Image (cartoon, rainbow over the protein chains, first blue to last red):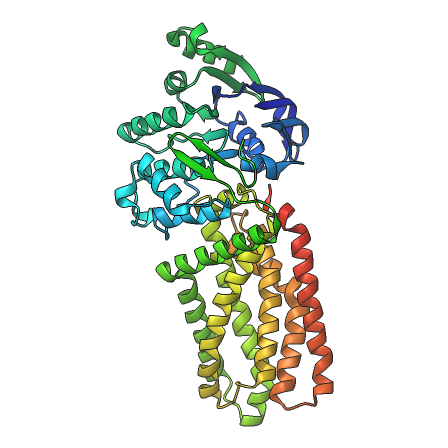
Length: 232
Length: 246
């Protein structure tokens, strides 16, 4: 579903991604972990067609980026640490707006169902700026799955959430991932990555330094492996 | 895989996609962006109030600074008006794009599978509506303070054309400047030199109508204004995709 070969991304003289190779099968949930500045967000922005690769080949759902970006965007949902929502619109208005932008039909029904799913139907007419951070992230997930994408990209979605909100978000992430979608999530939290994902890739110094299947490693050994890879 | 015009059921909910291509989808996206900007502004009133207060202050300051006779007032009016519109417009352009950037909404728009020029035209029309609202309030006030009739069809047409050109360039440049930390300072520095080809004919044509020149004298400026509107719009259409991307 996602195939990346020899990806290089430079900003001026600084190389952030240095020949990165990455492959995700359909329906797989992959967590991408790594230290600050490893290039996780840059990589996700390239997969999301928000940034152009300097070199290399990137394919999402069989379409090449950036050449076939429009076809990729139809199949892609993105949740970042920012909610990508308008604070001066209500939750319902935000979803109506994005539904129109995605060219969806039967908006009332679809938006209502999504609001039910993320547990915000009762507060659908509240302005988003009055929402807590956790509620905004749940609505952000609703926005990302409005058009029923095949691929979901989560860029540190737990940032700024308290324990309860993070746990609620985990349940929602597992729910949307369980519907056969391909998910790539970046995270700083190894425990959370191990809980949610089937595979954990460690990004360090612009390349995938290690790739581990969850059932092939004891979660207790993960921090040790992480340290050895990122400090190598 | 959601195809254009397809329906599929995921979980309990059928998701129906309209055909994603074509003029209809393009216009619907533009309409959605205009609707979103107007509703958000109606709630917050951040953009219009800032533009309006600034514009009224500029007009008042000029009124006290230029204690002129009626003849001289007519000659400076077009300059004062366009300085007011240009400065107030910059505030609006900055704010309009900052709203998109601050909560990551610009990324949300860029992730939508529509031609990105639809985002540009949606923002242009939204910004133009805000600018025209400010102008509609400033003009009568200016008429009273300076005792000059500004409600001449020719002058109003020039103001409309000038505003279109100004907003066309301004929206493009504000979408560039919004990525910078110093965007509030950067936009006027980028905008004013580039928008001069719009402002100069707008000022000259406005002055021509106010002073009752022959149409033959005004027409070259008017034509120049129209040509620059078209050129700036066409250039923005071609480069917007690259400007908004990292």
